[in-house]
Image (tube, rainbow, N blue to C red):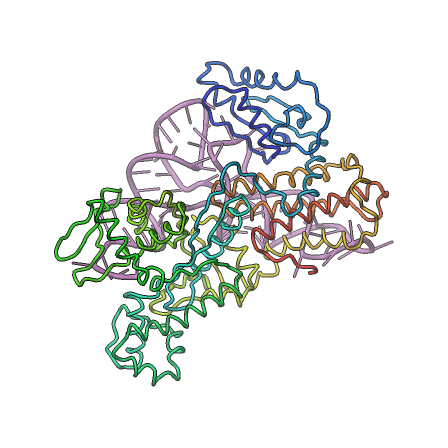
Length: 545
RNA sequence: GUCCCCGUAGUUCAACGGAUAGAACGACUCCCUUCUAAGGAGUAGAUCGAGGUUCGAUUCCUCGCGGGGACACCA
C-alpha cells in the first residue's frame, strides 16, 4: 500500500511516541497524502512545527531515486514513490505520488485481479466467529434484523478478505419461554386460552394457524411443542428470506435446543461458574456475581422454578463456541439488546472466551407520509424485511443499509425508497461498472500488457483515477480496522464518481492505438476493483443496464 | 429516575482532534452527431445552545435543549 510506505518512512524518522497518521486530503492542493505529525510533535520537542516538518522531509530529498523495481511494496523507499513533497503552514506535510508509482500500482491490480486489496497477514490466521441476525423464530424478520444481517454479512466478507477465518453464525432460540409464549399465543388466537398482553398477535400468526385447527387442538396441552412447530416454519421462512432474498449467508445455524441444551452445555457452564465461586443462592434462585465484572447488578442463572434463564443459555452458547476452537467472537446486536451487553461480556470473561466484541446497530425508523410508524413485533405492526426486499430489491436494500454507520439512527421512507429506486446510489455505482465493462466489450484493440505504455496515462483524469484505484486496499484496511463496511460503500461511490467523470472527458476507443491500449489497461483495473468491491459488498455486477 | 446512542444543507446521510465540513436526493443554469444521459459541468444551501480543554473542536469534557432505545427470577 502506498500509504503505508509513507507511514513506514515517518515511523523510521520519528522516535517520539506520537500517533503517525497519514490521510488523503479532500482538496487537491493539499496533495495525494498528507500528515500532521509535525504539528503534534511541536509541543513535546519545543520547536516550531514548520521546522520539524522540514527536518522530516529533508531525509527524503537527499536520496536518489532507485531503479524501478515493480509495484510499490512495504519496503519501497519514499523516494521511489513520491514526486513532490511540500511543507505548508501551520506544519502539514503534503505528498504527491509520482505517475510511475501509480503505473506500477496499476500493474499490480492487473496482476492480482480478484486478490487485489487482500491484506497480507503475518503469523497465524485468527479464527473468529461472527454472530448476526439471530432473530427469534417467532415471526418474520424486521428491518432491524435486515440491517444487522447485511452488516454482519459484509463485515464477514471484509474480515475474510483480510485474512481471518470466519464462521458466520445464526443462533436460533428455538426453545424456552418465548417459544412457549408463541405456542400459547396460537392457542389464545383460537380462543382456547385467554389472551395476554405479552402474546404475539401479528397477522402472520393468523396466517400460520389457517387450516391447522386439528393440530392446534391436539397440542392444546403442550404449548411449547406447538410453539416449536410454528417456530420451525418461521425459521424456514427466515432462512429463505435471508439466503434467497437477501444473500445474507451463514455457515452455521446453532440451535439452542439441540446444540446447547441437549449437548448439556447448561450443566457444563454451571460447572465452570461454580468453580469460580461467583455463584450464590438468594430467594430461591441461583445467581451469578456478574457485578464483579462490570455489570450493574448480579444476574439470575436458574429461576426459583428451577429453570435455566436465557442468560445462562447464552453463557452456554459461549462455552459451546469456545469448545469448538473459537477464542474470538463478534456479535451484532439490535438496539434493544443494549442493556444486555455488560452481562454477556461478564459471562464471556468468566467462561474464558478471550475476546468478545459487540456491535450494536441502531434503530431503523419507518416513515410513511411524514409520520413515524411505530413497529412492534408482538403487536404485529411492522414492515417485514421481506416486504422491503420485494419492494426495492436486494441490491438497493443492501446498499442502503451498508452506506450508513451502524451508530446512525436511520429514517427509512418505504414509499420514497420505491419511488427513488431509479435514482438510487447503487445504480450510480452499477452504471459506472457497466460503462467500464461495455468499453472492454467493444474494444477490439489487442491489449496485451506488454504492449501497454502506461506513461501515456498522464491527463489529470488518468492520474486521479489511478490514485483512487490505489486507495482501494487502504479502504479495505480501514473498514476492517474500524469494523465499518460503510467506508467501503462510500469508497465505491467515490470510485464511481471518479470513473463517470473520466468517462465524460476521456475516450478510449478511437484514440491513437498506443493510448487506447494504455487506457484499456486502466479500464480493466477499474473493472477489477469494482468487481472486488461488489464481491465484498455482495452487490450484483450487472452486464447491462 | 439511572444508563446508552443520536442531533450536520430543504431531506437522508458522510467526515482517525486537522487545512476551504463532503455526497446523494430535491431546487435552479448549461451539456447527447461521440465507448449506455440511470451520465457530466455549474449555482444556492448546514455543524442544536452555552461554557471548557488546545496551535486547531462537527469530533474530546461539563451543563442545558430536542429525538430514539435500554433498565425482569422475559427472551
